[in-house]
Image 1 (cartoon, one colour):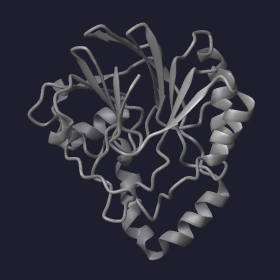
Image 2: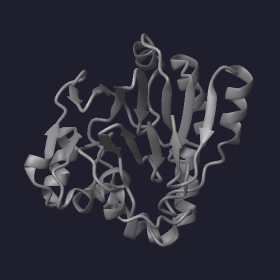
Image 3: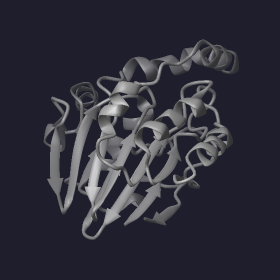
Image 4: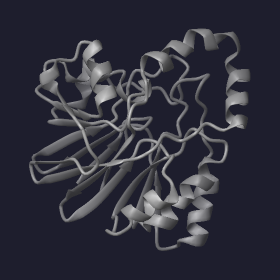
Length: 258
């Protein structure tokens, strides 16, 4: 199995004749760090795109990515409406209407779980506003025009392994406890959106006890509203408290075998 991190919350997963994307977002902006040289055509062939929620840094590039393909976009109704308004044909979109929604393709089993977006804390909001200054007027329409909708986490079963992807880190402990009934081989965990995001991310490891964690969304994908997250506190806590869990921090566009 090959797993490529395409920046922000984006992944490309390949296994045999199956290939799918998760939350692909390539365009970023000119000040993003690291830069993203990939274009939609560089993603190659894929059959499905799984979306966690409707914010711009998760769906903005979908129209260009699905153009000239037969790929299906699996998302909630709010993201589906936004994508339709952006010109994506309805026959490209399949809506998740309930938790436990399932889809099978090319020996991949995918299941959607209702999740939550992380709540931006006061410290993060204040520092972001100070950093953005007058630019915030130009940026606010991105949040208005790309509403969040129902946040989904996705569980993928393939090659006798279980991968769980979160696009945002707002899950409650009871929600995580409900997901912990099945072992997780690989957890794809976002580190963005809170001044204490590393502490919050450790809760996911505590509750889900994954064999491996790959962090994502820690990059400075759209400054000045984003910033590079120092993942070291998270890595150190996991290493100290859960030594059986392996942590992986990937470089943008890096591909690893799992």
